Length: 482
Ligand SMILES: *[C@@H]1O[C@H](CO)[C@@H](O)[C@H](O)[C@H]1NC(C)=O
Ligand SMILES: *[C@@H]1O[C@H](CO)[C@@H](O)[C@H](O)[C@H]1NC(C)=O
Ligand SMILES: *[C@@H]1O[C@H](CO)[C@@H](O)[C@H](O)[C@H]1NC(C)=O
Image: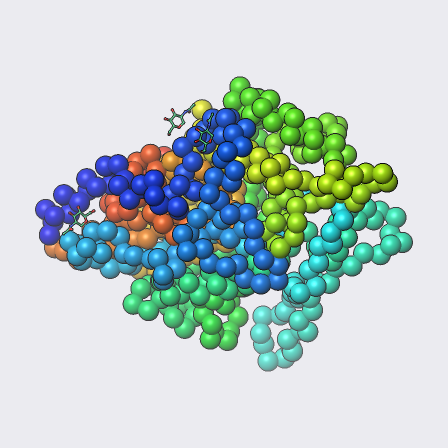
């Protein structure tokens, strides 16, 4: 067996044969031209095989091909899940002993509200965000009443701008997002429960559950965990760090991180992408009365805000945004077109690839953003590799800005914006042989991630750790001080 293992080390670094042109998942996840600004301007690219729509008030429809789907990224599911190749073909006998899972929250309303009044409402009455606190259970005190938030606008409030009429507390989760979360959890249960490490009845002391300090990730956890454990009746403690020093969601202050980001945005490539999209930004700016003044600058100097405002509509069953029509205006002059939205999304993808893969400063940026989170993952994987059984399953509810650095550190071949519920699963397998040997497989949104190191289908755990440790800084506190 041992000699067979050494033969198996090679496949990892040979070019992936299954990443063939015919695989719609691969085509949509790894656009070859993503590191060129022509990717943005080339309208033939369209959405590059990606999906940017999801229904209102109900769960997303599963996509047979598991294509890139900004609204609901694919995830491991029983219909498509297979064991790593050498295990599946019987040349290695191995047991899945640990899963490190991280996901972005499910779909939601926008963070960034276009400053002009829009003609479509955005309603969230079908979601009850719970906001109560309870004493830890004791005999003497009753549980509190489970109150939830209901957002309304008071027309006499002089600060009311109300550019989107409706009932949402932005960027709250939508009902569709919550229902997607149930499905996400049910599928993970089918894949990782049963004989695999995920306990079937509910969280055990070997299950690690953590969220960022945001309502979005915590709300997603409630939904996904219900899918994982449909019959569990108890309450579940979700770990989180203090907001001001959280190791995810840019919780801790880091001047060096901000400086490196500035530097990346001052570089030629970044300016070139702004140059080729000048016309698009001017058109959108004119439509929504966004100028170049300081407070509106963020709309104009990256595609983050426009992409967010558009996806929040189309990913929840709405049309692309339209400004309320002004007198004498022609139909259509006031609405974002499909072509404009697609270019915005392509530009957003280009930016993510640039920040975490393309830029000369990407490595340094990943270290400053993701060092601590990646370090936490590395320590759990190290413990598994040492044969300890502290954890069998870990699930982290985080943000796009946390998955970007992880995927960048893995050396993903091309990085599109990690969409809603984007996820990475690091599986650790123990090969049954003369002595314990641990192997890793890394899935991105349900399929083996394709990286500059090859597809991460089956590699000694030590090699994966080596790659990740390269992004963990020794003394991030002084590095951050800048
Ligand atoms: C873009 O990526 C491709 C494929 O990975 C690579 O061959 C090419 O050199 C890259 N171009 C730039 C400008 O970085
Ligand atoms: C534009 O995109 C299409 C579709 O991906 C591609 O076939 C074509 O080569 C691209 N054109 C340029 C000029 O990059
Ligand atoms: C099983 O898969 C591994 C890895 O791809 C490969 O090297 C090996 O030749 C395969 N073995 C059989 C019996 O097909």
